[in-house]
Length: 514
Image (cartoon, rainbow, N blue to C red; front, side, top):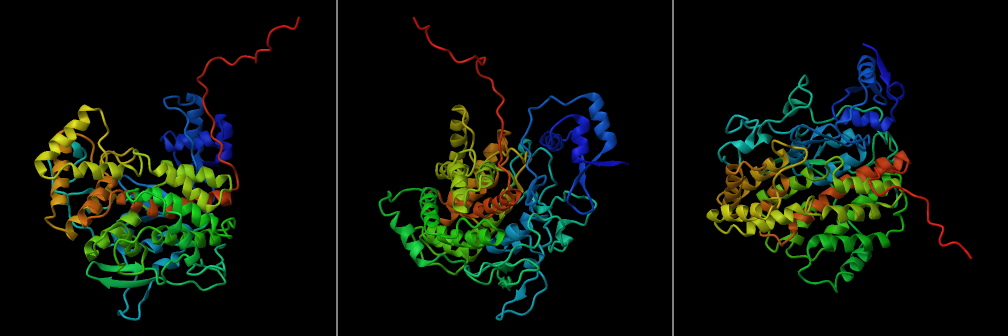
């Protein structure tokens, strides 16, 4: 079979390269990568057939952006080739963020900590068999238990390869990475990550073992300098006490950016260092409600969202939620963040752009809507009324349905399972089960990660809007990974509109001069 490159294929079809990749995303064309991973190749025979048949017009053109960060599978994302569900069970948020930023394979060769015996490199645990056989139409079956979820059997997008839980999670060395060996550690920053070939030694993740199993952890806490934190806290003093955490995060981001003289350095290492500072500052500048039980981002974020100490199981669920929500390809907020980065906006401006979009009720704000839905169900029998009233008003049920995962979001299934294991018999879990059963009785869409996040915050006793805050802090990692690609690409993302207004006429010249 003859394979041709994208330029040749575009010329033969008489379309722009963006249109060619839109055909790929819509399933009209298939492509493969060249051996060096740098080029897209197309079947000359398939291109010729399409050229003879004419351009497909069943759907409008789409914006297509090539990215090496996240691939969306049947029911879950994969971060630079690794199953996000496996990473949620075996890695901490800091290490996964570094993986999104650097694609450094050495992150998955953890060194044992001095207090624990050596362990082999962490691998995702073998999946548990599903409680019931997989159903291709989950919304059309009787109610099932919360732990009967699609994450029980990982779905491999490459069936010819070994199952995901049997593969070594350490990725092979990649060619054609957008930042192959440019991650030099900025000497003015601390706790950096150096990629292979870097001159500076970087902190190395370690494997720690707890009751929840082995987890790869970043060895040094991420910090923001005290002066910047004080300024961010001071900026919030005039805000209402009941302001949602997401609104506070936007104020904090603005202040942190104004206090960072290095924010305009857009090389990969500097952006990664900015990301560590920014994420630490976003968490630590929120009002403290309880005493942190450790130095990780998950432990410190818990203390800002919950007035009572964390149980190990629920803290493990928060850690998993941060990993599961770290990126999701070109979600609405990520696309907005990439547009900002393509204009060379600094990382703080990129994150502010993402935060502004994430709060929408059809995006990260859906978890807040799901929180309110669960709050209406004080006992299981109230679930039917809560759903019926929303259906009657023609409202979308928050926390259910997904534009990508039509048959269920495995991220939500895994997170719900972790919450149930951490707090068996909790009344908020019982309420969640009642809502799930009512949705399935009505043959409405399946739950997604927003519903699982709302269940986690309700069971934990967190403040209102905590789910949005977890989502936002988590997604900063993904926004900055995409920003790095745009900084490296060096071209402005310019979308075009399909004009549907009144006919275009020449401007009026005014009344004649007498």
